[in-house]
Amino acid sequence: MDYETLGNVVLLAIVTLISVVQNGFFAHKLEHESKTHNGWSFQRTGTLAFERVYTANQNCVDAYPTFLVTLWSAGLLCSQVPAAFAGLMYLVVRQKYFVGYLGERTQRTVNRKPKAEEHSRLKRSRVLAAGSASQTLLGPGVTEGARQWRSTRGYIFGKRIILFLFLMSLAGILNYFLILLFGSDFENYMKTIANTISPLLLIP
Image (tube, rainbow, N blue to C red; front, side, top):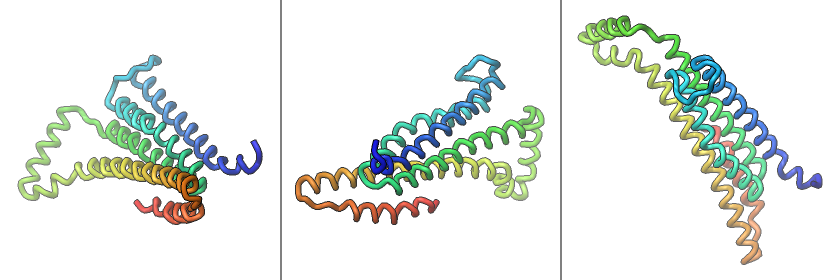
């Protein structure tokens, strides 16, 4: 492979290798959680903590092939730099999504109480609710709702990045047929547009 060809794919390869390391991190966390709660044998069912880690890992694995296809298609057919930048952003979002699941699992594990104590706490909350119902209802629920909202935002943000890579791929294919049929090459225009739009992915 000559130097020019290598320069056209090196950023995509770097992002891909980072994603492989990230997958290894997810697998390690899943294995550790499995051994902690299920012994040395791996099982797909177990405690709530394990099931949450398993679900987070499975969600990331399910979206991984789509990410790789759109990343390389956008980088090869349109422009490497914005595609690699978007891919790196996707990995950051995926990391925050997974760690968010771990944080929620840890919070639930630490704050887990016996049923009797939880029942009495709920009764006290209902008594206090007589004077300020809305304030009491927003007590423990705010933290949980905030965690769910952050997970949802991460999921939507990841889909937006995939959509951006997909549109870049379509633009590259369209440009190929424009060159083939009409002899018009809009590659420089597309690279300029992609380079301009890609920083907007940082907007939450």
